[in-house]
Image 1 (cartoon, rainbow, N blue to C red):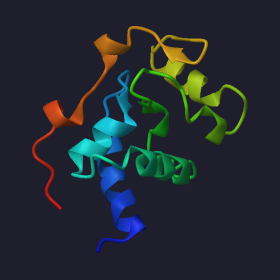
Image 2 (cartoon, rainbow, N blue to C red):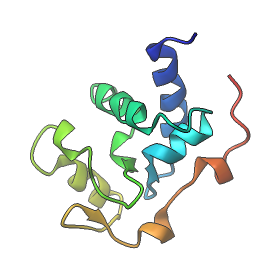
Image 3 (cartoon, rainbow, N blue to C red):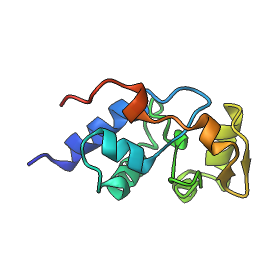
Image 4 (cartoon, rainbow, N blue to C red):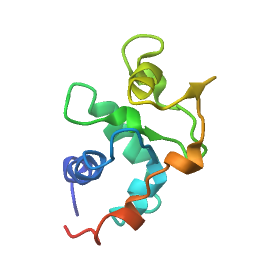
Length: 114
């Protein structure tokens, strides 16, 4: 059985590859790493990544483009500000043009190998 730190490492590998100005979802990452029922655990990994400047956790949102993880960022609107600094429009905690800027690792990356 794999440890949670191994799971987190797999999540971080994917998140580091999300292009600037794009977002993906917790569920898409979970599916890509072969754990389709673990989107909540992907969220826990994103929460654990906030002291890791090379992990762009702001680019991971829920399946509808909502900033559900925003309360884990320092400051009231830091997640939104980070996304907006990449040119992503956010209104009332909702990524605008979500379908156009959505990045699916299952389509964009090669098959995940552990």
